[in-house]
Length: 456
Image (tube, rainbow, N blue to C red; front, side, top):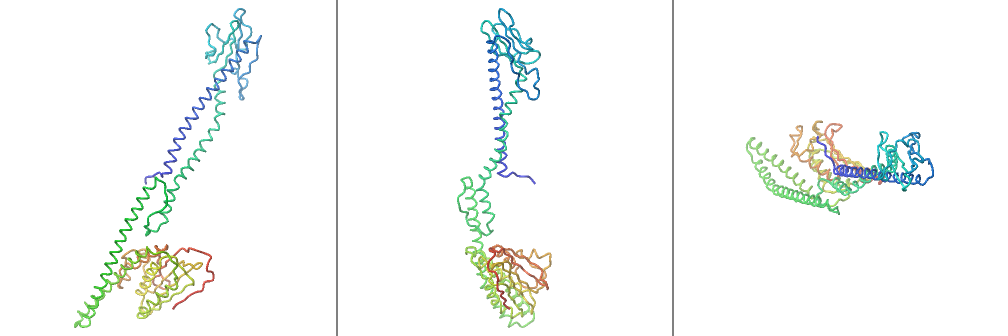
C-alpha cells in the first residue's frame, strides 16, 4: 500500500528543510565573517607588534600563539627583525633568517611563502629603520577556526529548538482541522444537519462543500422516506380489501383445491401486509430524526408493549415476562426504541412454539439502562448466521416457514445504532435466540438501591 504523507508531515518536512538550509547558510556566513574579523584583528595586532618593535631600542619577547594541545610548536612563534638602513640588523629573533629582505615599496601586510609554509608578514618603517614581524598562517587559521567554532557553538542549539517551535506552531495551526475532524467523527450516521461554528478562511470552502453535501443527502433521504411512507400507506387499503375478499371467497369455496389456493392468497396478503408495516416502521424511524432526545422510561414502555401483544400471546398460549430494575431510564428518541422493541417482541412471539415463554429483561447502572435482552424458545439460529441476521432481507432457513420480510432485525439494528447502542444476537441457554440491545450508560453513581420490577 502506498504511504501518504499527512498535511502536518508535509509542512514539517518543508519548513524544517527550508529552515535547515537557511540555518546552515547563516552559520556558514557567520563562520566566514567571524574568521575574517579575527584575521583583521590579528593583522592589527601584528602591525602593532611591528610598530612597537620599530620604537624599541632593542630586542623584544613576542608571545606565541596560544595552543593548549602543543604549547611548544615552533610555528606558533613570531619571528621578527629590526634593521637600520645604514647600520644593518639591530635586533632579531630566533628564526628571523627566513624573513625576506626589505626593499622599497614593500606593503604593510602581505602573504609570503617562507621555508615551505605560508606566513603573514607585517612591515613598517620610519625612513631610518625597518621593522618586520611574521605569523604562520596555518597556525593563525587553526586559532581563528577554533575561536570561531567556540563563538558559533550556541548556534548548534538553535536548530533543535527551531524544530520544536515549528512542530508546535504547525500543530497549533492545524488545530481547527483536528477540531473539525473530531466533530465529524462524533456525528451519528443519521445526523445530516449543517456544521455550524467559525472556522479559518482556508477551511470555509471545505465546510461549505460538506454542508452542501449534507443538505443534498438529507433531502434525498427525506424524499426516499416520504415515498416509502406514501407507498406503504397506499398499499395497506388495497391489501386489506384483497384479504377480505379472499376470506369471503374461502367461506364459499366448494372444493379442497379452491380452499388451498385461497388460503395461499390470504397468507400472501398477510406477508405483503407485514412487509408494508415494516416499510412504515422504516419511514417512522427516519421521521423520528427530527425529534429531540428525551428520557425514556423503559419499564413503562415494555409494560405497554406487553399489554399491546396480550391478545397475540394469549391466542398462541405464550407467556411473556418483563423483568428488570426500576427506575431505568434511556436517553434518546422514544419512537426509535419502541420500533426496535416492537420488532423484537413480534419476532420472538412469531417464532416461539405455542406454550413457550418469551423473556424480556433489562439491566441498569445508576438508573440508566445499559442492556435490554429478549429471549425466545424458537428454533434458534445457527452460529454462523448470528452475524448475518441483522442484514436487510436475510432470513434464516430454520425460520422460512414463518411469515416474515427479513427487515425486522435490520430495523432493530438501525434503531439501536440511532440510540447510540448496538444489537447483538446469541443462542439462548435452553434453545432459541437471545437479542441484546447494549447501551453505554450516560451517567453513573446515581439511583443506588434500585427496586426490581417484574411483569408476568
